[in-house]
Structure formats: structure tokens, C-alpha cells
Length: 144
Image (tube, rainbow, N blue to C red; front, top):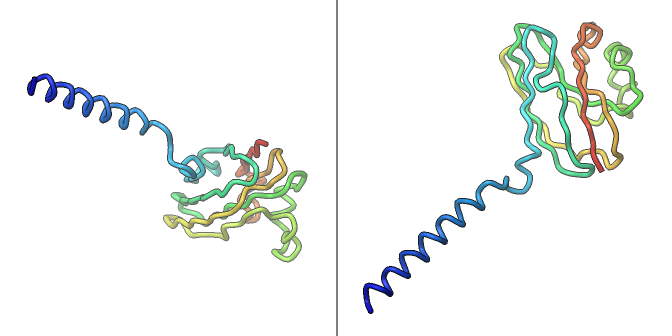
């Protein structure tokens, strides 16, 4: 009788352990909203597209692995990234969702923000003059 009880206890413990391990496949709340975006010398963001849910808290780490200085900005829909890169910060204020100011090559910076509540596609751009025109743009897709 004692061996049977011990066997059942061991079997239940193993089952509980396996169930806990299977439950670990889900990401913790917020983990899917942590993004690292890199830029190299090719004037491209990696990844070029980020997808988030409207109104969620987002954490972005921008790693500049390039030799040049770059910035990371998310612009409201309809804002031309080339024109924005030639505008002053005061002129851009209402057009920005997020801006990580220009950082030197080999540096990184992190910012948190709340994703826009309005679904749509938002432009990601480097606002260093000439960089958006060279193709340094991406997309933030905000889903409902």
C-alpha cells in the first residue's frame, strides 16, 4: 500500500511539473511588447516593421551598430519622413508618437511609450537629415 501511494505521489508531482513547464510557453504580460531595433551601416532598421496592439505599453531599445549617428522616431500617419527630418523639433512636436534623439554609433537607448489608441500604420524614421531619404524608414502597425 505504501509503494502504491508513493508511486501515485511521484506520478502527480511529475504531472504537475510537466504542466508547469508547458505553461511556460506563453510570454509574460508585456514581454511581447519589448522590441529591440538595430541599425547598421546599410541605413535600414532591423526589423523594419513592428506590430503592436492599440493602447498597450511598449518598450523600444534602439541599438545603433552603425559608424554614423542615427535617431529613431515614430511619426503619426500622413507625416512625410523626409520633410520631418528637415523640420525643427518644435515643428514636429504634434507629429511625433516617440522620438529617441540622435545617438552615436555603438550606442543604444531605450524608451517606453503607450501605443496609439488609433489603429493604423505609423512611419518609423531616422530624422537625421538625409537618412530617411536614403531609405531609413520602417512601419509601426497598430492593431485594434
